[in-house]
Length: 116
Image (cartoon, rainbow, N blue to C red):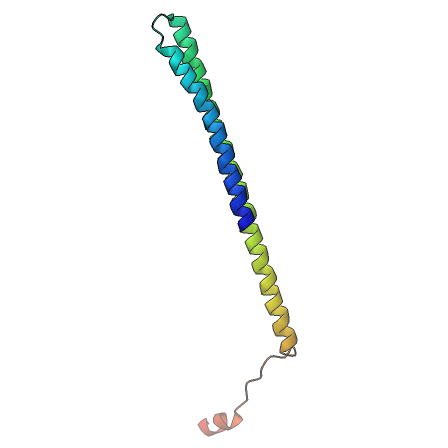
């Protein structure tokens, strides 16, 4: 499980770095927007750039969620595989250990005769 924790931690760090980079761009664009003497065309261009950056953030988040889903699926298959191996081992051990014979139930013909 330490390996899973390491993968998730590296993913968290990488995702945080990506978001921080985009946030820096958004902050710079917001500062440009605060300038009083920019034209309406410049304001519109800055707004469009901010929307593009916000879309990039959403895309990075979606990719991260897909990554985490794939990792979760791999872990689940690994756990199921281990459980199947353990179950197979128990089944084989039971078959070998029991001599392959099922226990027999005694036939009580005496009970049937007294009831009749």
